[in-house]
Figure 1 (cartoon, rainbow, N blue to C red):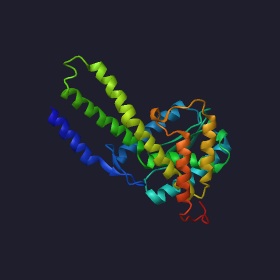
Figure 2: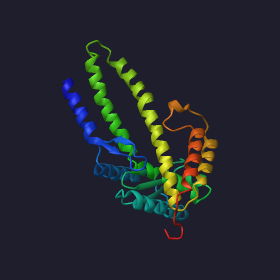
Figure 3: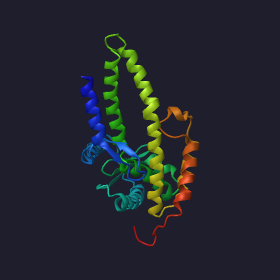
Figure 4: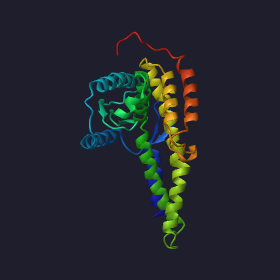
Length: 260
């Protein structure tokens, strides 16, 4: 049985390795792009059934304009094959997300917080970057591999026979969460920040507004979670990384004479 699990794991690792299209980091993804898109469609339907869609004409026009420009750059440079859709949801949450397949949702709470379209472009660029880089599928794949690893380790240590099952589950879960999933989640956020800045810059938005937005988010935060316990980088580290990315970014040529 142990040899069987080891063989299955090795085959999965061999078959599922891919390259991050922007950073070229090796990724382990067990879900196909087609499966991703179907999952995105299913999630979209569930969200639209439960959430209240805003019909505010200004908010909808703003989101459509900014998201269309970001999406055009994404299509031209990364060819994700998405059918883009844009929705504004009535909610005080300061949030936005992009489902696999290009379904973008922005909450009215976020739209009330931003100062200008450039700051909205920073947020939408970041969320579109997560989708293009397939971070959601990578996280799910890591969890799937983690379950296989957990079974192998439990068998090797005779955990169940010794009656250590509950304790092992707790220890393994904490180790996986803080040792693997949280650091990788922070890596995903840094990658999405970097690609998101690139997308907004190439769409002819001002990348310096991303820094201003995150300063505003930092002031909005009511409590500070230590970075090693968080899925997101600390605000100070994030802003420092953004400044570094922008210095490299502004040396890249872009054509802002065309109409988006």
